Each structure stands twice: as structure tokens, then as C-alpha cells.
Image 1 (cartoon, helix red, strand yellow):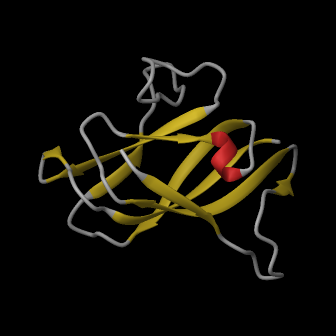
Image 2 (tube, helix red, strand yellow; image 1 turned 60 degrees about the horizontal axis):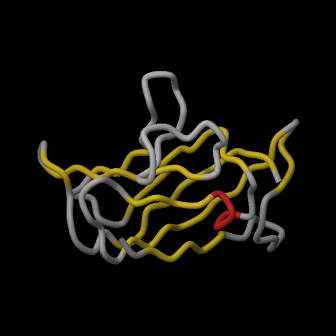
Length: 117
């Protein structure tokens, strides 16, 4: 697993978590250069957050594969290191291609994450 996280700037040029109600929101591109089976674990701290409460995949550059944020039956964001992630310190991007798990260089996956500082 190898990835680079780039936090995207908003319309004012600010690149970091910003307040939205009682939570913070951050937009980022996750460049997954070496995807392996089981998913790509992303630390909340890579996004400037201490805890991730929700993740939306809002776009991807490799359209032949589908990227999603994995969660458990209880709605918790799973991670590649454990079966669930009750502290919210990580989330996992899982990719599929035509019914099987994706592989290789997935390029950019754009996410919007909500969480706490």
C-alpha cells in the first residue's frame, strides 16, 4: 500500500479542515500508487483531523474501477488494521473492478471527510 494525500484548497485558498456546524470538513485527493488487496488505510491525521465521522468519495480519475469508503455493519469506518475502528482514527478506501477487487495504480480518489480536530 502506498498513497499520498493532498488537501484541496477552498475558494478562498485555505487548504485545511474548516468548520461546518459542530464538525470540520476537508476535501482531499488520495493518490493511491500501489493498491493491494484489503484496501488502503488512510489516517485521519493525513487530513488534519483527529477523528473521521463520515467519508464520501466525490470523484476518481480511474473510472474503470469503483472506489468506496468501507464501513462495518454497525456503520463504523473499517480499516485495514482491524475489523472495526471505534476511535475513528482511520478509514479504508476499497476498490473493485468488474466484480473483483482492483489493483495497481489507481491514481486520484477525491474524498470529502467530516470529523473532529
